[in-house]
Image (cartoon, rainbow, N blue to C red; front, side):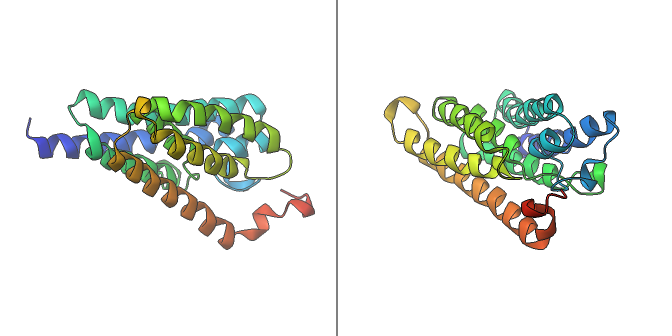
Amino acid sequence: MNELLIIIFSCIIGYSIGSFPTAYLVSKIKGVDVFTVGSRQAGATNVWKRVSKIGGINVFIIDVTKGSTTIIVAKILGLDGIILLLPSSLSILAHWNSPFTKFRGGDGVSTLAGISTAIAPYAVLPAFFISGIIVILISRITLHPSLWAGMAGYSIFVLLSFFEKTNVEITLVLGITLMFIAVLTHSIIFHKRHKEYFNIAGGKN
């Protein structure tokens, strides 16, 4: 198959995988519309806090799997290096704007975690583990612990990527950095547009 066709096919698969509305479906099973509670985002954190703890864990695992599967499929098709960031970006874009939920979604932190783990496991897994601990520790004091955990985890990833044993190409570090910035920016914009959803003091969400 022509390399360009492989890239296009990988991007289509990445978008298709990313668009799977995990949080929406898990919440619906419990009789809850995730877009009407808490932060109004279809993510593991919102499901954890507003639907059920088990549901939140399931969403997290599946969304991480969405990201890692995108990379695994791309590698099976023969892609490597910086090109892997193309289907990765489409997967996150689809998570933000799933056609199955009227182009609504979540921040994409879990999906990005799966993508990063599949690309650079030795640098990401330790950061992933620490991020999980942070989420658990601060989940009761903020509506959006995954964002803070993601920032901490990313910082650890960058530090570990400089070690020779982790074997992460600088182009991939930069690429993952850009995706992280995109996820962070997406979250900040949503927060600014919908401040009322994150009014913890009011205790209504």
